[in-house]
Length: 276
Image 1 (cartoon, one colour):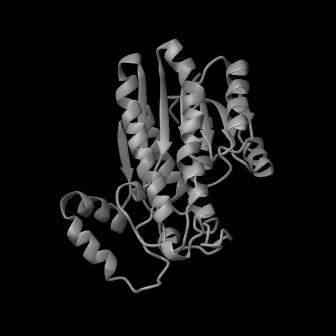
Image 2 (cartoon, rainbow, N blue to C red):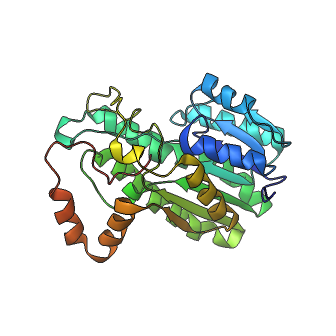
């Protein structure tokens, strides 16, 4: 195992499961100093307790939607480690509901977790990176940030917003020595659909078949770390339908629309919404 992240302070949100957990485990094996965060303290600590690398680690639970909590968490990390070399905004939540059936509260949750959460944490850490003249900010978006798909309108909107924000940030901080990397997964075998919100805010509590047949979190994490180490602007981690749809959106939006509309009305397992 290489040691590409040795002595790097890496902060990962959404670290208690899925892509975040897999990324943390591989970073740990590569010697990183880790800050693990999620809003699930017990699950987060369980992950931290099973890490065996020689880098220091901190389990720091907080809710990315709470501004005061975000600020306090950032201050805790900076006070303890003095810096954040790589911030990986990875917390996310999706939905499974049509526009006509979804409460406004569900849309607010989509935006709070997937857009304002990474925005707030980035703004909390950015001044310290600017002062040092170096750093890297990473955000997991989704193929849902590249095109629209049924049953995920709020999630798609939030991921499109995240793309716009971090693309703009990249241009602002490029000359200050800070890189911005967007991670764009397709179908990854995680519990994201189980934790998705229905129109009334209740849990969807089902595994989407296309996610169940997706790539493993470990494979995704390997490709994520390659992108981070290479300081890539953006990397698409998607196979099959999701990769095809990204290309169709770019080259033939009308054909993508036709393909999407051919699916049966009411079907909720649309293989177009990404992993998170």
